[in-house]
Length: 193
Image (tube, rainbow, N blue to C red; front, side, top):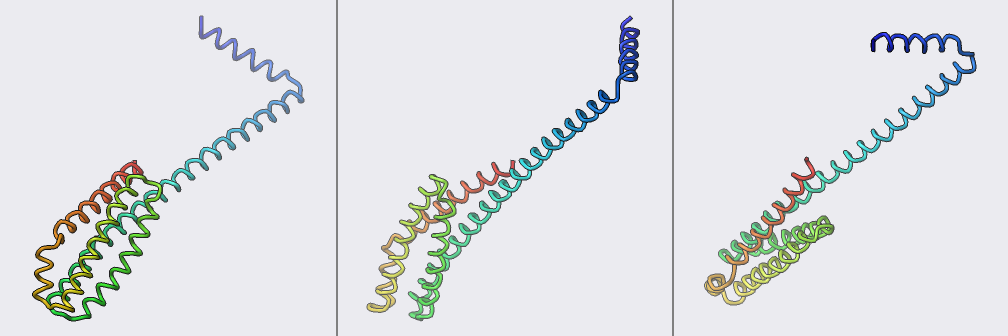
């Protein structure tokens, strides 16, 4: 039967192993040791690759969170610039202009960071270019409001704001920031898989 053949086969192997010389035994030990070294080397390589991939994935996730944070801060700074300009237009207090200028400088640093952080993503660079354009438009409006308020008074500044493209440019900025945010969230989702 098959069991007898298998049993007989194992018995023959056992008898052969008992009768082998010491050199053959040492050769088998060396062969087993070499096999163990190969297995350990292969496992070490696999573990190194997994650790390397995990580190790279963690960097990608951290990078995406940094971009998302900078997008949020850019949105907040944009709102603060608008509120400071409005505060100056209503009150004439130059402290609002100083605050606006500080926030403009902060936002410029954020925009530059965003440009650098998304340099490897053509779609984000396209969004960034559109964002840069509308941010410049908004800043020009803010500075024009400041100039008109200083030279012609509150009523003239209010009339300018009523006819300017403040709402349209605000909508564009928020839309572009939203598109950039969504792009990063999709990257984050892909990186977390």
